[in-house]
Image 1 (cartoon, rainbow, N blue to C red):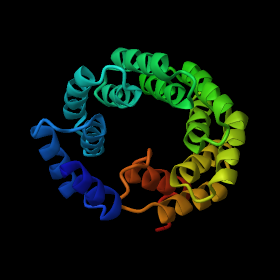
Image 2 (cartoon, helix red, strand yellow; image 1 turned 90 degrees about the horizontal axis):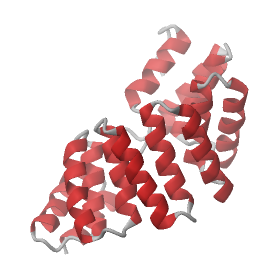
Image 3 (spheres, rainbow, N blue to C red; image 1 turned 90 degrees about the vertical axis):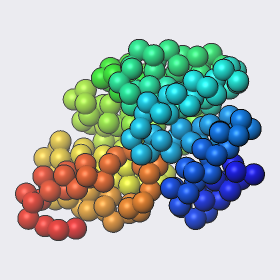
Image 4 (cartoon, one colour; image 1 turned 60 degrees about the vertical axis):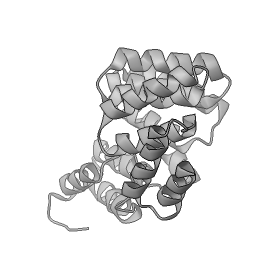
Amino acid sequence: MYEHLGFLDRQVFHDYFKANLRYRKAVETGKATSQGFCALASLNLAEGDAQAAVELLEEAVKKRPDDHHLFALMSRALSRAGRHDEAIAAALRCRKLHGRHPLPDEVLAGALRAKGDYLSAAAAYQEALKKDPGLVRSRVSLSEAYLMLGEVEAAQREISAALRIRPRDPDALYWAGRVAQAKGDLEAAASYLRSALEARPLDDKALATPYQDVLKAYAAATGGSRVP
């Protein structure tokens, strides 16, 4: 029951504080499902407590050692905690359990990107996109990886494809702005970054790029002279 209430608080009412309490109560009763553990761990991650998320997921993995979703989230939590080799190992376990799906490739790519290995991350994102070309987040992240590698035209190609699929995606608009900055087109960069700020709900914790980073990039593109 607590999980059902937590789901409603999180997905319907967007009350993350109350959802956290509901899911934690489910865990404390000993009746939480793996989805309940994942939900609470993801809320902890959104709040910046990666260590708490890792501890929750370690408990969940003991109960469900063959659940690839747990290893996917475990990898992300370990990356946030700075435990990059363990994050990669968790991603590889996820791939072993569910290798035909693009999710494990995305998870592995994210772990490699967090470690700073953008070349290997790009290869993993490419594998995910071979399985599903419509994955906007993979296209956005591949664009980022290319930009970090200095491959600006490749980054432009991927971010343009992402925006064709989802024109108002805040993360895609942010990286489109970063690509435009790299190309020296500050007017286009400011336009993309302003759109990224306008498109993102302030309470949305699912976006990859923090609001402060978008605002900082917008200020750099405009010389700090314009307020969005």
